[in-house]
Length: 273
DNA sequence: ACGAGGTCCTGCGAGC
DNA sequence: TGCTCGCAGGACCTCG
Image (cartoon, rainbow, N blue to C red; front, side, top):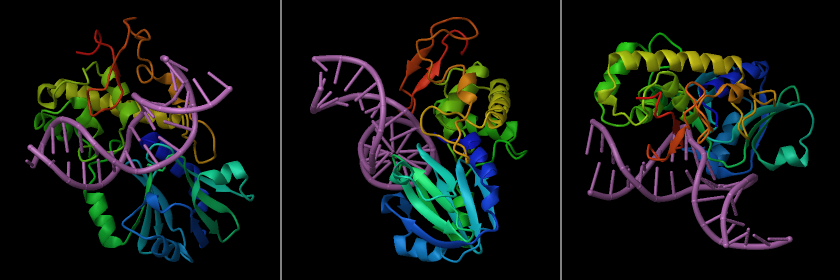
């Protein structure tokens, strides 16, 4: 489940493809495309130079001249570069395969294909970018901004924290962890959170995202770094995936619910109020 | 405008 | 053993 730290890791690992040109590309399934047809994407990629590879929110962004390929890995997507022909196992979920000018193969792999690919011109990019909220690791995500968004909403604070309009990059795992660290009940309505708790949530979100980047992300099952390795942050989780187990702070049995946005929420009813 | 809930997609593990 | 079923969830959609 690539969130910000996982995509950041992938993008850093794959900087070595910058400067190469895409010789040709293949696509095995069209259901991962949004707003573009297969021929349009494949013809568009052909002959284009990869000028930059960056991250925006939970997405990897390839800039190729005046176009951008946005990869939204969703649940099970990963980006990998192969120097040898794909083995049957590697080929099985390799949805997009781009042959680079140096002969290497850039692959978007996605088992469940919840992930999507966008092919954007300048106008499409502007529309995509402006629909997203601030980057949490940039100064633009201020306490004032976050507290203001919380104050305007009666939705659960966890849902607001995961809403990419308000702040990007935080998904289910890191929302659970940040709210635990900040000692805030995930179901608390945004408008009841208050400025001090908002500041704590913001601080811990930033701290946890940075720590997760240092650990190369969280691997539960499918996520792999840009070099095919597993992340290590799953070893540092306090609540996610630990329903029924003892709280690492107070020993209370951790609670679980699906009441918020139909996502698995795990929390300590004693520590989080 | 906002919130609630459905949909996509496949592998895996629990339960019978 | 072999089957069914529920679950995992980011982004996007519709409905009220």
